[in-house]
Length: 255
Ligand SMILES: [Zn+2]
Image (cartoon, rainbow, N blue to C red; front, side, top):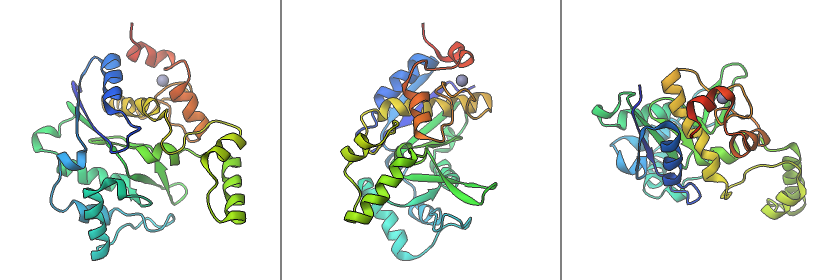
């Protein structure tokens, strides 16, 4: 039984962790606390090396990582200046192990769940198709929730990629967000989306539900515990009514 949850702030301004904590407190009646960035609070020696070792180098290669000094230095700087860490994909399970090791020994028990909101893109290896898949979250202790994963992991409508490719060919750059938003049918989240905080709530709750029940995700696509593979599904599950399926409404709905 998890009676205590600690959320860790993300550097991303759009992710309001205090608002997420308030929402979680109301729905779970657990003690929910907020701490600063996980990688600041639990900074340990050797973390840059662990991040370097968890780097996905090729989307079709299970092997990750490098111990090249330049990369380790990059990871050191990225820990200091999180806003500069972009464009790198990490093995989410390896990062989870590294962060579990970084937790104080007395705080590793599942009665105290830690949820680290990260500004890193994370992935898990798909044994069925032999490639890496970006993820919004990796469940366990600590649970990882990737803010960029929210925008990048669930696939956007096909027309988005077509428009992006067409624009890149003609002009050599990505089209401005307004163009993409106005010309593409179907709803999706992009970086710095004002709906970020609201969409993250369900992904944080998934972390608690998993350690409590041992069951990852819910099959009902209307439910906040649904594991969306496409952006329109994410919008449906996280941002539209109802919040939960009947079963999970009984557990998590207030009033
Ligand atoms: Zn459900």
